[in-house]
Length: 60
Figure (cartoon, rainbow, N blue to C red):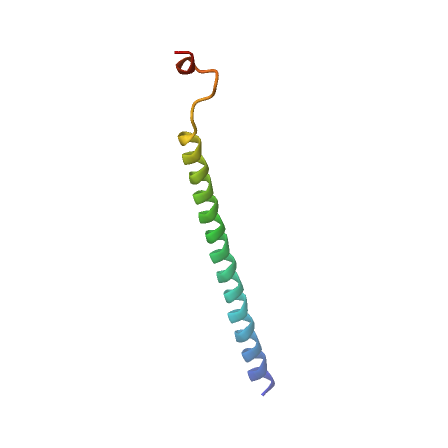
């Protein structure tokens, strides 16, 4: 009986560990995707900004 309890505890611990690792990896992927989207949005905003005041087009 003692060996059975040990095996059950070991299996539960393994399942818990794998669940935590899976959630951690899933969260890292979500954060990475969020950062990529943010960087892409910032890059697009920079492209859409009007030229600075000192450009030669403003003097015409």
